[in-house]
Image (tube, rainbow, N blue to C red; front, side, top):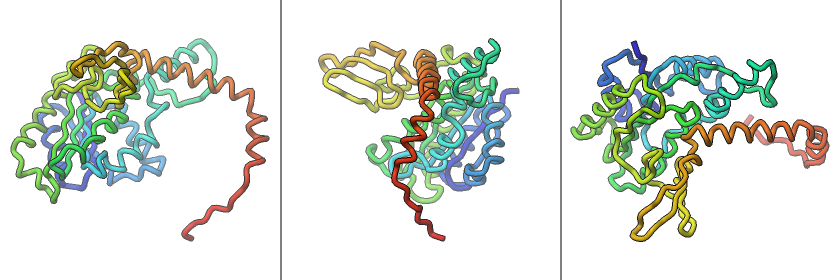
Length: 289
């Protein structure tokens, strides 16, 4: 049976957890709820435990309260401590090939082939504000939880107006939408990344389906994933290069090659780096104890 992992970044029984529970129940398969507040993400044993949950699941549903326009700090810490290069599908793909050829890579990242299994995801973000500008960065930042492992996002939604404890329960539309997200995620279980259908609300970007755009003259870049295009008359965007999106394996592979090439160049320069580091002024850190 497929396994669905629910990752909750809110308080126990709070609004973000309520919509997560509804989504998990709607998947109709084996589901587990992990509260980040129950983990110490600076302790290696807890990180190792959570890593096993991530690589063994078939789907990931993440729910967060919106804090200062973005996701909760625990999720940011998770990205920094557990994900990144060690969870990057292109890097793992490359390292597996290097080691099978009898060589060792220039940068010895952890190699866990389970990263390469197909997975799907859904995102839930719950905020108190009724206006969109207080919620703008929540979903873009949540994509940092999934793009490294090449997890296809099936659905994503932001809720507002839930600024007091458990007040999401007053919003019947939100409760139904959370249930639909869980069912949407379940409908794509087992599919390869490029075969997954996106079932959430449409956005401007054809890759991440969000609408946070970086504009330089007529040149357009998706601020969430890096897909590129050109702004045309009447505000229309022609998306001309999807391979630059960090959601694509093309960009992941290019980035993985860049990391190895940079490490190779720097390896020859370690004595120079050490010499220059010795000349940097020293300061004794100030601590509270």
